[in-house]
Amino acid sequence: MRLFIALILIIFTSQAAAANIYDLIEFRSELAPESTLSNPLKTWSEAEKEIVIKQFKSLQQSAPGLLLRAAAPGKIMLYRATSSPSHPSGAWVRRRHESSFIFTDIYFAGAGKNHLGIIYTDWLFIHEISHLADPVDQIARSDEWSEIIEGRLLSVSRRLNQQGLSLRQAMFKRLDSEAQPYGFPSIYAAISRHEALAEFSAAYQFGKPVPHEIQLFLQSRLYNKPKPEATEIARLYREANIEFRNEKYKKAIKTLTKSIKIAPDFSQGWYLRGFANLNAKKFRKAQKDFKEALSLIPMDDRKMRRESLEARIWANNSLKDFASTVSDYSELISQDQKQSKYYYGRGVAYIKQDKLALAKTDLQSALQLNPNNRDNITDLLQQINMRLNQ
Image 1 (cartoon, rainbow, N blue to C red):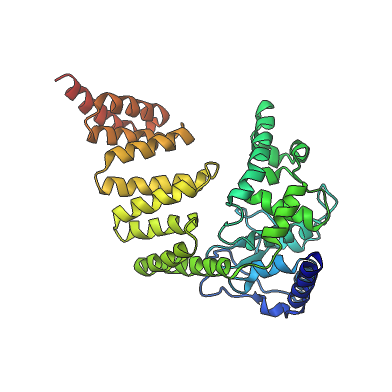
Image 2 (image 1 turned 30 degrees about the vertical axis):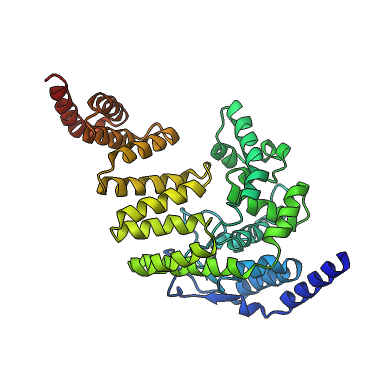
């Protein structure tokens, strides 16, 4: 059996390595029709192309499965962009609307080595390719990866909290040593499950220490050949994104429904279909979609949960379902207790339910957090006091 598996891997590796690299990548000086990139582009020099081709060919030999995953939804569009304050890194990728790899001036400026002794751009290349290989986060959001990584992420966060530091502060101070006791190759790996996956992938690729269970996970989920259904889900999601961006909401709903039928646990599909239904004014369906999405989105993915809750509140209010609005605002407040708009929104929802004492408490909190909204909040508080004194 082991011999059979080894032979299959050899055949797969040789087939992938024999593929023409230009079937997988495309250098572009103009945006592809589906691109959402807004950065100014530059023309590729032949020397820059040679550097990037060399990296892709090296990856094709050493990790063909990773490269095939990255290119599975379609050719990887390679753009040469100017450096930008919003993207201070030497390179980054866009993977949900398109498969794009953007290289900036910094990438070709002759960067040195990182704290592990690896050339910065070589490490960054593998890191970003690893993101492309998981275009709709099915790997990073999987229960298996969550079980492996969540405890480690929490341990680093607690360690930093004891020192009065946030993860962001530790990252900018490059305190990699604070994450290494928990097996992380860098402090950046402890930012999220997505960045952990990409950073561990780079460490694995360059032969740096990686916990055994993570090695096995990378081998079986990220470095192997993608299954046809995974490729199809990524393709459908990308198609739906383009339809959504062009305000073709009915088409987007239909396309996303296909992806959800293939993978009912595809949180991104439920999430985007919720927005499509919302924009199509199908509020009840939007409510249901966001309910499914929230049941699948990990609790630590605060951004996606926040966006889902805020969107569902729009649907709730359109349906005059103010009890659900209160519930959703309560979860948002539990995530971020410094947002005046959440207390204000919940206060207004309490007014709609005639729960004036609760509304008053929330509006007072909103006013305390944002005195600039004094006129609007004060008017509501005066109305509440008049009704309470009747």
